[in-house]
Image (cartoon, rainbow, N blue to C red; front, side, top):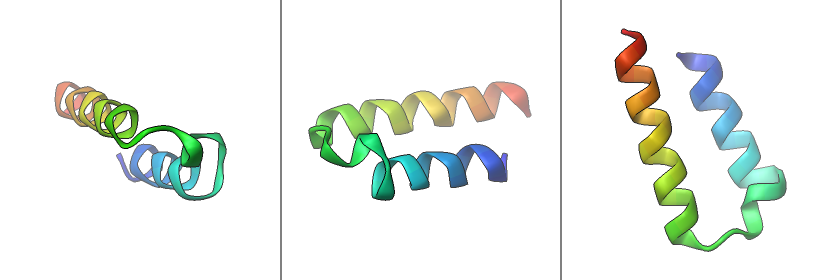
Length: 40
């Protein structure tokens, strides 16, 4: 779980996702949250 959250944070803050519109980043964060919940 930590690696997913950390990876997303790195991509959003320092990687290619930093230039994406906020709505796209929100949708990706929500999809990641669902992915993590399903894995628990």
